[in-house]
Length: 478
Image (cartoon, rainbow, N blue to C red; front, side, top):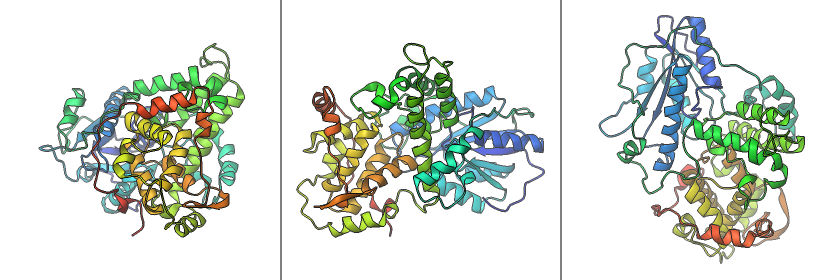
C-alpha cells in the first residue's frame, strides 16, 4: 500500500486486525508469519476497538470483543503474541498503530473495501514509516487475482468459479520464532474478565443490547457452522427463501462479517458434508449436490461478487453506486404523493402501518440480523415510506449499519443497491418509476405465513434511542 522499505533492525512484524477476528485460517496472520519467518522476527498481532466508530453500541462492542478474546486465545495456541486495546475514558492511547509500528519491520493488515477499516488502512499506509501490506481475508478467491474490468455477475463467475479449487486448501503458517515478549508502548487489555461490565463503562449506544440469537465468539461461530451442516444444508435449495423456517438460512453472515469464520473454512465443511464425511445432515448421509451448489452460489457467487464490486467503488455505501437509470427514474418521481410515508421513529422501532415491514424491522432490531428474503421487501418498501429517494437510501443504510451485525459490509450494501436498482420493471409506477416493486406474498403464501408475520411484527424489541434525523452525509455525495 506504500513504497516504504522493510526495516532491518526491527523487533517484530506487526499484524493489525480490524475485522478478520480469527486466529486460524486467517490469510492476514499467515502472511505476517511468513514474512516474520523470512526476516527472523516474531509476529505481534494487534486489535483495538474505539468508542467513536460509527454506531458503536453494546451490540457491536460485545460481538467484537467476544471475538477478540477468542482471537488472542487462538494466537497463543499458534505461538503468537496478541495484544488488544479498548479505548475508553482514562485509558486512551493516541496513535497506537504508529507507535507499535515504530518497532516493526513492516505492517500487515486487512484488505477491506468498506467502513472504517478502509479509510483507516489508507490513512495509516500514507503516514507510517514502514511498508504496509494488505491481505484479503474475507473472500475465498482474493478479488485482486481476478483482474479489473468485470462488469457483471456472469463475467465475475466466469473468472471466479475456475479459480476456487486453487484457493480452498491451505494450512496455517507455522511461526519459527518464539512469541514476542518484550517492551510495548502501552499496557494491553486482557479481556478475560466481565466484558459486559467493561462495555457498560464506555461512551457508546447502550440502548441497543447484544443479540440474543448470535452469541459472540469462536465457539458460537463453530456451533453455527455445525448447524449449517446438520440442519440447514440438507434442504438448502428448497428452504432458503422461506423466512418462516429456522432451518432455512445459515445465519453465518455476522460471523463472516467480523471474520470469526472464513469462507474457506465454511466451504471445506460443505465439501466434507457433500462427500459424506461431515455429518451430512439429520440422517447422517451425504448432502445433495443441488443444495451444496446453491449454498456455494450464495456464499461465493453473490457475497464475493459484492466484495469485488466494492473494491471498484470510491464509497460502497454511497447512493451514487445505484445504477444511473434507477436514480434517474426515482428522481423523476421524487415529487409523487407518498401516502405510505412514516416517521423515523416508526421505522426504527418497527411501528409502521405495514405489518410485514414491521416483522422485518423487528427481526433486525431484536436479533441484529434479517433473513435475506425479508431484506428485499424491507428495502423496497423504504422507498415509499420516506420523503425522497436519497432519504430512502440513507435510511436503509442507517438502519442496516446501526442495527445489524452484518451491516457496514459489501454484501449488505450490494443487496440494498440491488433493491434500489436491479433489472428495470416492466412498467412505470408512482414513486418507484421503473424500479421494480416487491410484495410480501412469498412469505404470506407459506404454510402459517400470515400468523408468522403477525407474531414477528409484535415481538418485543429494545427501546432504542431515535436521532433527530437520519445521518445523510455518510451515504450521499456532497
